[in-house]
Length: 509
Image (tube, rainbow, N blue to C red; front, side, top):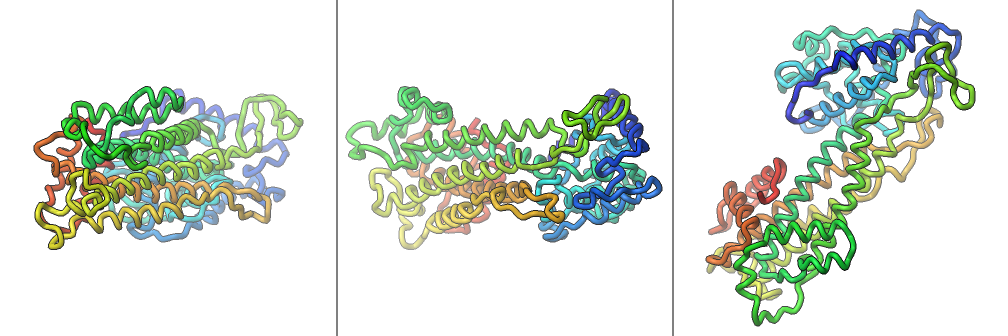
C-alpha cells in the first residue's frame, strides 16, 4: 500500500469501535483524577495538571513543540514518500484498534490524506529526531502538523503548506481534543513502517543474491557437488537446506558443469562458492527472526496511555470509573523493533560480503588466480587484455560498499542517552537502526548487481555452453537492460540498471 498507493478504508465496524473507545475516554476526563497526557503535561511535566479550558491548547502545543526533526527537508534529505505513507498507514491502523480514545474523525483524516488524488497528501518529515522510545515523537509530529493545517506537505511532487495540501485533498483540518495529539505521535510507526518496507526489500535482495550466486558458480566453472542434499541433512540447519535446494534448481540442466566434470585439478572451490549455502542460509534464518518481530508489530497498538473497558489495574492505580479505565504503560517503546532492525544489518552484510568475494574471484581468475575457470583477466572482451580494464574497478566498488556496510552493522540500540529530565531514561533508537539497515541494504543491492554484471559476462565466456535454465533466464534478464561488454564503458549505468531489476523482484523465474 505504501508503495503502490492502494486505497485505504476504515470499515463501519472499525469506526463504531473507535467511537466507543472515545466515549469511554470521555467518561473519565472529568472524574477529578489525573490522567497522563489527557489532563496532565507530558514527560517530566506529567505531574502538572491542566485545566479543562486548556485541554485543546495542550494537544496543539504538543504537536507544535514536538515537531523538532532535523536532517533536512529538501529532496533527497526528507523521509521519502514510501516511508511517510507507511508511517501514516500504521498510525491509522493502531488507532483503529480502538484502545487509544481518539474520535473517528482523526483516523478518517489520515485515511483521506492517504487516499487523496495525485498520490496523496504526504507530510514533509525530516529524517532525524526520534529516540524510538516514547514513540517516534518528532517525525509523527511533522505528520500531525499537517493534519491540523500546519507544517508542510507534498502533493504530486509539489510542496505546499499543510493547510493548502489539505484543501487540495478536501480534508478539514483537525481541532484536536483531549488525548488526540498524544495518540497521534506516541507510537512506533516510523520504525515499524520502515521495517516493513525493509522486509520486502530484503526478500527481493535475497532472491537476487541466490540468482547471482548460481550465475557465478557456473561462470567460475565451480563444482556442483557441494549442493548435494545429503550434506544439508547432515548439517541440520533449515536455512542452508533451503538455499542449497534453490541453487540446485537454478543450476539444473547445466552444460557448463558437465564440461569440466572429468580431470578438473581443482579439488575444492573457495568458501565463497562452496560455503555459500551455509552463509546465505544462516542469513535467511536470521532474517526470519526479524520478519516475525516486524509482522507482530504491524498488528500492535503502540500508544500510551490506553483506554480499556472497566475494571481495576493490578495495583489498584489508574482505575477509571464504571465501564472504563486508563492504563499508563510503555507500549510506545521501540526495543521490540529496534533489536530486530539492528540484527537485520548482519545478514545484509554477509549477503554483500560473500558476493563481493565471488566478484573478486571472477575478475581475478584469469589473472592467474584460477586458470581452470576459463575466464579472461578482469572479464575483459576477447583479445582486449591490457587495452581494456573490463570489470576491474567494478570489484573495487563492491569492496567499497562492503566496507561501509561494516560500519552500519554497529547497533544503534545498545547506546543509551536519556531524555525528558531522565523520565525517559532508556531509549531504543529504533529509527536509527532502521536508517542504517536501509542504507546497508541499498549498498548490498549494488554489490549483488555487480556480481550479476560480472557473472553474466563470465557465463558468456563459456559460449556455446549453457548453464541451467534458471541461470540462463537470469542472464537474459540482465542482458535485457545491459549489453555484453565488447569494449570498455562506464559500468555505473549498467550497475544501476541491474539494481532496478533487483528492486522490483529478480528471482530467476
